[in-house]
Amino acid sequence: MKYNKNQLQKYHQAPLQFNETLDLEAIAKQRFPETVLALSSLTVDGTIRYDEADDLLLHVTVTGQITVPSSRSLEPVLLDVDLTIDELYIDNEKHLEDFEETEAVFVLENDTLNVDEAILDNIVANLPLQILTANELENDVLPSGQDWHVISEETFENEKKQATKPPLDPRLAKLDDFFKE
Image (cartoon, rainbow, N blue to C red; front, side, top):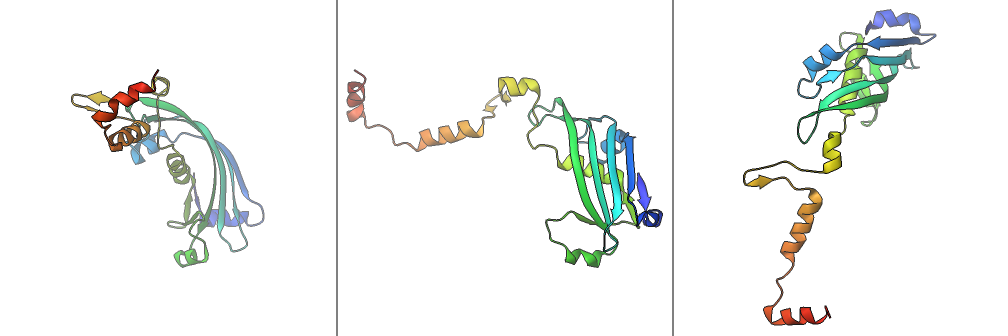
């Protein structure tokens, strides 16, 4: 879904509302080949409206499913997509200085609002950093190979603490057995 700013001029009084099912899998695989293995049809419900400063406000809710590689084994993992997107689009780059850095403000490219790209960008940006298969979550088995193995951060910290403990003086080792009785 692409909208030219000229097309949107007629929605100054009332917002443009849409409720569509989009198939963006081909575009997603092309733009994010390492991240997106599959993308179901997305249900998109939203509005585009003008604010007081003649900037475009995009409000979209997106639901669907995405298949991405596990961050541990690269096995496919199916995740639900359920997100809300609120973005502001301006036509003049100099106008960016009027906004806080934390606000989602974008400059229109060629006076066109590309809703498909906004949806894909937000889906990928909202993926968790650690994505595990059900088996990986259940077993918590980490990868290993010849002369190497992956350990959790917790195990690493415990090993580090053990390494920093001073060794027990052999002369006092007998006292350690004294308290066991």
